[in-house]
Image (cartoon, rainbow, N blue to C red; front, side, top):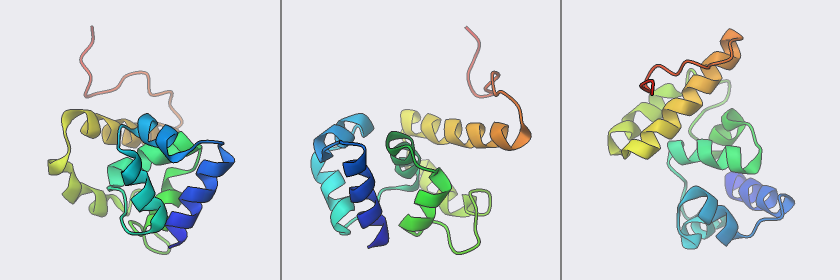
Length: 121
Protein backbone atom coordinates (compact mmCIF):
# COMPACT_ATOMS: atom_id res chain seq x y z
CA UNK A 1 0.00 0.00 0.00
CA UNK A 2 3.00 2.33 0.41
CA UNK A 3 3.40 2.50 -3.37
CA UNK A 4 -0.25 3.50 -3.85
CA UNK A 5 -0.04 6.16 -1.15
CA UNK A 6 3.21 7.55 -2.52
CA UNK A 7 1.82 7.68 -6.05
CA UNK A 8 -1.37 9.44 -4.96
CA UNK A 9 0.51 11.89 -2.74
CA UNK A 10 3.16 12.76 -5.33
CA UNK A 11 0.55 13.19 -8.08
CA UNK A 12 -1.33 15.64 -5.84
CA UNK A 13 1.89 17.52 -5.04
CA UNK A 14 2.48 17.87 -8.78
CA UNK A 15 -1.08 19.29 -9.07
CA UNK A 16 -2.15 16.59 -11.50
CA UNK A 17 -5.38 14.67 -11.50
CA UNK A 18 -5.57 11.00 -12.45
CA UNK A 19 -6.73 11.86 -15.96
CA UNK A 20 -3.70 14.15 -16.52
CA UNK A 21 -1.25 11.49 -15.37
CA UNK A 22 -3.00 8.79 -17.40
CA UNK A 23 -2.82 10.92 -20.55
CA UNK A 24 0.88 11.58 -19.99
CA UNK A 25 1.54 7.84 -19.63
CA UNK A 26 -0.79 6.69 -22.41
CA UNK A 27 -3.00 4.63 -20.11
CA UNK A 28 -6.63 4.88 -19.03
CA UNK A 29 -7.61 6.94 -15.99
CA UNK A 30 -8.99 3.73 -14.46
CA UNK A 31 -5.49 2.23 -14.62
CA UNK A 32 -4.06 5.08 -12.53
CA UNK A 33 -7.02 4.70 -10.16
CA UNK A 34 -6.24 0.99 -9.66
CA UNK A 35 -2.56 1.79 -8.97
CA UNK A 36 -3.56 4.40 -6.39
CA UNK A 37 -6.09 2.14 -4.71
CA UNK A 38 -3.54 -0.64 -4.40
CA UNK A 39 -5.57 -3.11 -6.47
CA UNK A 40 -2.95 -3.22 -9.24
CA UNK A 41 0.70 -2.41 -9.81
CA UNK A 42 2.19 -0.94 -12.97
CA UNK A 43 4.56 -3.06 -15.03
CA UNK A 44 8.22 -2.32 -14.32
CA UNK A 45 8.56 -0.40 -17.60
CA UNK A 46 5.66 1.84 -16.60
CA UNK A 47 7.35 2.61 -13.28
CA UNK A 48 10.16 4.33 -15.19
CA UNK A 49 7.59 6.47 -17.01
CA UNK A 50 5.77 7.20 -13.74
CA UNK A 51 8.98 8.25 -12.03
CA UNK A 52 9.80 10.66 -14.84
CA UNK A 53 6.27 12.11 -14.93
CA UNK A 54 6.29 12.62 -11.16
CA UNK A 55 9.89 13.85 -10.90
CA UNK A 56 10.89 10.90 -8.72
CA UNK A 57 13.85 8.57 -8.61
CA UNK A 58 13.17 5.42 -10.65
CA UNK A 59 14.93 3.16 -8.16
CA UNK A 60 12.94 4.51 -5.22
CA UNK A 61 9.66 3.98 -7.05
CA UNK A 62 10.64 0.44 -8.16
CA UNK A 63 11.48 -0.34 -4.53
CA UNK A 64 8.14 0.98 -3.30
CA UNK A 65 6.31 -1.04 -5.97
CA UNK A 66 8.05 -4.17 -4.70
CA UNK A 67 10.09 -4.78 -7.85
CA UNK A 68 13.30 -4.21 -5.87
CA UNK A 69 13.98 -5.64 -2.43
CA UNK A 70 15.80 -4.09 0.50
CA UNK A 71 19.38 -3.33 -0.45
CA UNK A 72 18.72 -3.85 -4.18
CA UNK A 73 19.39 -1.19 -6.75
CA UNK A 74 18.39 -0.89 -10.39
CA UNK A 75 21.32 -3.03 -11.55
CA UNK A 76 20.54 -5.91 -9.20
CA UNK A 77 16.82 -5.59 -9.93
CA UNK A 78 17.23 -6.04 -13.65
CA UNK A 79 16.25 -9.71 -13.28
CA UNK A 80 12.78 -8.56 -12.30
CA UNK A 81 12.41 -6.38 -15.38
CA UNK A 82 13.82 -8.84 -17.93
CA UNK A 83 10.89 -11.32 -17.85
CA UNK A 84 8.53 -8.47 -18.81
CA UNK A 85 10.53 -7.46 -21.91
CA UNK A 86 8.96 -9.97 -24.36
CA UNK A 87 5.52 -8.56 -23.51
CA UNK A 88 6.46 -5.00 -24.45
CA UNK A 89 5.63 -3.33 -27.72
CA UNK A 90 8.36 -1.39 -29.57
CA UNK A 91 7.58 1.95 -27.91
CA UNK A 92 7.55 0.44 -24.41
CA UNK A 93 10.80 -1.38 -25.07
CA UNK A 94 12.43 1.88 -26.24
CA UNK A 95 11.26 3.52 -22.99
CA UNK A 96 12.92 0.80 -20.92
CA UNK A 97 16.10 0.91 -23.00
CA UNK A 98 16.24 4.70 -22.80
CA UNK A 99 15.88 4.60 -19.01
CA UNK A 100 18.62 1.97 -18.74
CA UNK A 101 20.88 3.98 -21.06
CA UNK A 102 20.34 7.18 -19.03
CA UNK A 103 21.22 5.32 -15.83
CA UNK A 104 24.31 3.76 -17.44
CA UNK A 105 25.52 7.16 -18.69
CA UNK A 106 24.86 8.79 -15.34
CA UNK A 107 26.95 6.15 -13.58
CA UNK A 108 29.68 6.31 -16.23
CA UNK A 109 29.78 10.10 -16.18
CA UNK A 110 29.12 10.41 -19.91
CA UNK A 111 26.60 12.54 -21.76
CA UNK A 112 24.88 9.65 -23.58
CA UNK A 113 24.66 11.40 -26.96
CA UNK A 114 25.23 8.17 -28.88
CA UNK A 115 22.37 5.77 -28.22
CA UNK A 116 23.40 2.33 -29.57
CA UNK A 117 19.95 1.00 -30.55
CA UNK A 118 18.94 4.04 -32.59
CA UNK A 119 20.10 4.31 -36.17
CA UNK A 120 21.62 7.56 -37.32
CA UNK A 121 19.52 9.66 -39.62
